[in-house]
Length: 365
Ligand SMILES: Cc1cc2nc3c(=O)[nH]c(=O)nc-3n(C[C@H](O)[C@H](O)[C@H](O)COP(=O)(O)OP(=O)(O)OC[C@H]3O[C@@H](n4cnc5c(N)ncnc54)[C@H](O)[C@@H]3O)c2cc1C
Image (cartoon, rainbow, N blue to C red; front, top):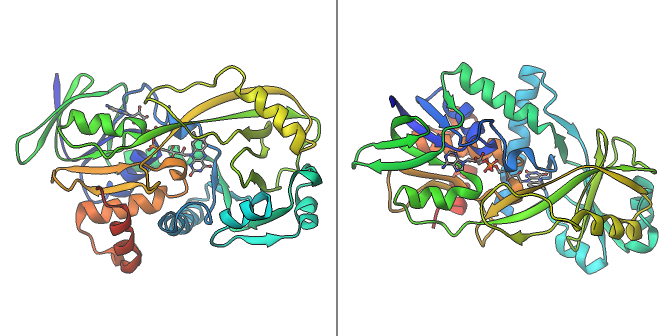
């Protein structure tokens, strides 16, 4: 086995691990290990690709707004088309929409909602609200941007390298990942649905993170919404849809507990959703182009877990991003860099008060 040494070993090559690798690279020597032969294979290649500043609890909304600013900076510095404007509209009963319409959402009359989304059946909703500060994101491009930026700054990225053993001697870790043994001062646990398993393997108490299934599909339709039209979600969490490059993206919005693994769609899930959408919309779905399932992993509070473990000084959590992993990614990476290096937030252009609040809200239990 060949040996490697670094300041920080990141376990997990999804958006959490890769965005931290690129943000941390200028300040520390970093190795990132990923079990699978390709990066972003699990949840990070299975999202709906939407960043919604009004979605989630208060700290998540803050992190989303900061992520949008950081991505806009990258976009203007590199010219990469990482995001495109795409609003988000909630529809449903008055009480359901009122309960879910947070932050920057604006209430709409049903007639205004129908003008923006003529594929909705008027009888299917009585209230609507819209967030026009949202964007869609090209998640493949974003993952690739972080991979390139991390590699350019010296991060060693190893794929087909599952972590199977880890030992801490009081000062440093010795970690077996695939055929390598890696010495590291700190382990960052960015293992998505496996984050609690990785903690146990390292002798650290888990954070009670639970993976939940969520399925989506790209379908062909007879009555397509125009490309720039909003993502539409039922306020009772029974479906969402949005225009996509090759049709329409649809999801039953399910939140069903699952074990960590390579989740796959089940027979009947998409067919049931198609029947339901026929009663709520005039999309006229004709066939399914492709369907997939991913695991959204979160703790009971639904807040991500970011920070050093309370009992273990060499173990850092970067997990539990649930349904907010892309929309919070750059801000969480920034927060993690500050906590890992002790850097003054202002050097990165971050607001110290926001960093303080996020540190407290996301602290491991
Ligand atoms: C249908 C769906 C729609 C979604 N829509 C959105 C959206 O619109 N906007 C948004 O912000 N979020 C969305 N999400 C959530 C978002 O996709 C996730 O929050 C995010 O991808 C989680 O990233 P991650 O890096 O934590 O996990 P992952 O992408 O799962 O990465 C973790 C990695 O760790 C690796 N790993 C695990 N154990 C080990 C080990 N022992 N050794 C080495 N590597 C290991 C795994 O192989 C995996 O690749 C959606 C999710 C789903 C399923």
